[in-house]
Image (cartoon, rainbow, N blue to C red; front, side, top):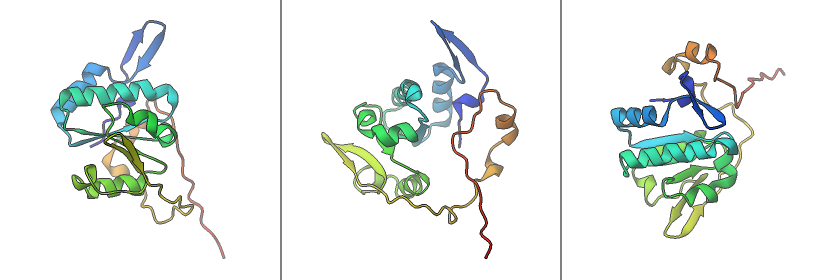
Length: 173
C-alpha cells in the first residue's frame, strides 16, 4: 500500500519555514494503523534527507522490527551516510525497479543474508554493497499500475511534482 506523505495538504509552519504533507503524528498513526513489515522511503534530494530520517525514526519508534528501506537519488549517492543512522536498514542504490522487487520477493531472507545487487546495508560495522548494472533499455519494465492509485489526487494537488519521467519511444524500421 502506498502512503505518499506529500499527497495530503497539511501545512505546518515551523520556525522560519513551512512543511507540507503529513505531520509526524499523522505518519506515526498511519504506521500504527497499517503495521507494515517494510517501509520504503523515497529521498529525492539532500534537502529532504532530514525528513526521511525523521520518518525512519518514527517507524522504528512504532516497531523496531519494521524494516526501513531508503531509495531515490540521495541515498543512491550517499548510502554510506544513511546507513550510519540506526533507523535505516537498507538503501536501494540507483534505479530500484529490479532491486526493490528482488528484495521484496526474498523477504525476510533478503533482510539478513542474501546479497542483492543494488542494495546497500550494514553488516556488523561494514557497508555491504554490490552494484547492479545500469540497463539503458527500459522496455521490459511494465507500465506503472495506475489503477492502484487515485491519479486525481496527484494531478489536482499543489504539492505534487514530477521527479522522474519516462518517455515511451517507439522505433520505426
